[in-house]
Amino acid sequence: MSSARYLVTGGAGFIGSHITATLLKQGENVRVLDNFATGRESNLQAFEELPGNVEIVRADIRDLAAVAQATQGVEVVFHQAALASVPRSIADPVSSLEVNVNGTQNVLIAARDAGARRVVFASSSSVYGNTPTLPKHEGMPGSPMSPYAVHKLTGELLCSVFYNIYGLETVTLRYFNVFGPRQDPKSEYAAVIPRFLTSLLNQEQPIVFGDGEQTRDFTFVANVVQANLKAATAPDAVGQAMNIGCGERVSLNEVLRIAGELLQTTPDASYRDPRAGDVRDSLADISKAQRLLGYDPSIKFAEGLSQTLESLRVGVSR
Image 1 (spheres, rainbow, N blue to C red):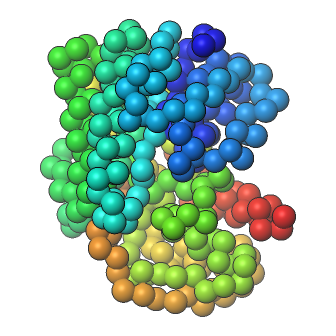
Image 2 (image 1 turned 90 degrees about the vertical axis):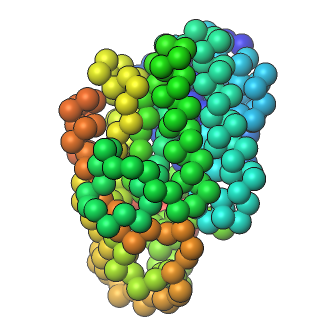
């Protein structure tokens, strides 16, 4: 393998490919480990003609030997690889556990043994569960409502253990409803924003599970990339878990209204029963990330939605 300063697990996926592309723009050498179960070949095109160098390793984080080889010589691991879906984990909790818990432990073991300096772990706001307290802050106890949430909380605990016992620097980022270009709208477990936007672009009825008044702290992917890069070097973030959101609450009905304005249409949604495992309201207290990382979510929801819509327009028009 060629030398690489950074390893991005799940680097052909939605968030991972954005982290990889940003590092390459900075002229860095990056290694991507992805099994392409949810990562997409088309995302690799985003790496072409960028000044850095990228190496693609086609392997699964459940394969410890493969992860160990991919981690050789690496300074920082951005661990994004996951089966990132609450409904998927409810339908198939075994695969979710194998990837999100056993795979995460493999990444931590490999990073420890390879002498990597730091692992930045992608966790989830789902660890908080359906607690009525808003905003969600890191001092709140975890109250997972799905296997996925349990598995992410377990990954956080593993990170803490590997830091406290082995001295491997770990930083945990709890993502709040990330959206943006390259998020797959066609997956059975697609996130709500690409599903909504694709339905509207195709002049189809968006499907809303629940009454649409449930709220989320939707976070544009560029803000999440910024948080990851800052987490790779911030000295006071080591051993900590922190929220990565925008600190703004938007209902699903409001998402449809704003999307309709951008498309100059009036959405006619089809409302269905709520889904098991979904929380009612979510809002991030981001003061800890602001303090420890210097995190600044500069791209707000409406601007991010407009950028996402433009990227999907290209796909629909092809």
